[in-house]
Image 1 (tube, rainbow, N blue to C red):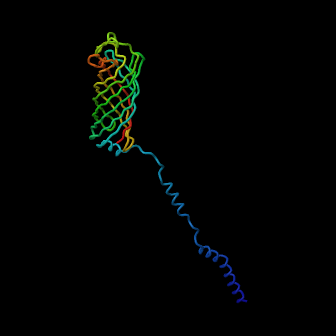
Image 2 (cartoon, rainbow, N blue to C red):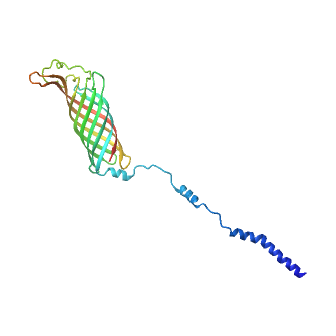
Image 3 (cartoon, rainbow, N blue to C red):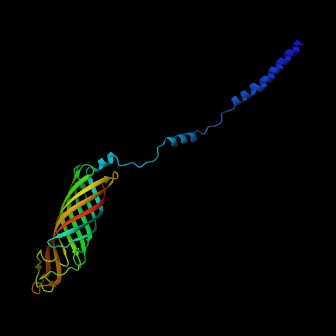
Length: 261
């Protein structure tokens, strides 16, 4: 009987081991489930990456514009001229181009070309085109402000403006070239040029290492010799019969430009 009870106990122990220990050993022997490492790595990288943002010009960009080198500027302007001593007035739009070089941190030297239309009251004011070519030394006052002083040539190209003929100097009455006094009425048409002096103040904003934009204001003084050709010549000398008159103007303008280096 004792042997029978010992055998039953051994069989019971074996049964318990098969029910408990064997499944645990089988689960431990199974390989772990594969982990999607690339996906987890990608998710962590995406979470760590900062959002894309456009940065403002850096100090290096502004410093690049202070170095010597070639410069080009182009832009639009709106302005006018006021005549002195009877010369006609006019306002209008135009455009300009400047080319030159930055000499050092403080100075630039530019050659400026300006061209635009001027108009006003028909039969009284200017009606045509105004142009100017000037050399401009530029003094840079820090990173943004600059002052330019220009000297050069400026003039007008007019067709028929409708202004009345000046007294005593009508086309048909002239038999020789004639200079109309400055205090007389303005000639009805002017094609001529003279000296001009300019003063320009500009505020510049650097867009990047290669481009910038600027707002500017300018005043100028112009002295022009206007010529009105009658289309006739002297019979003896074949000299063209023209009327001349000196015009003096004070001008102003506001402009917006883009610059490249």
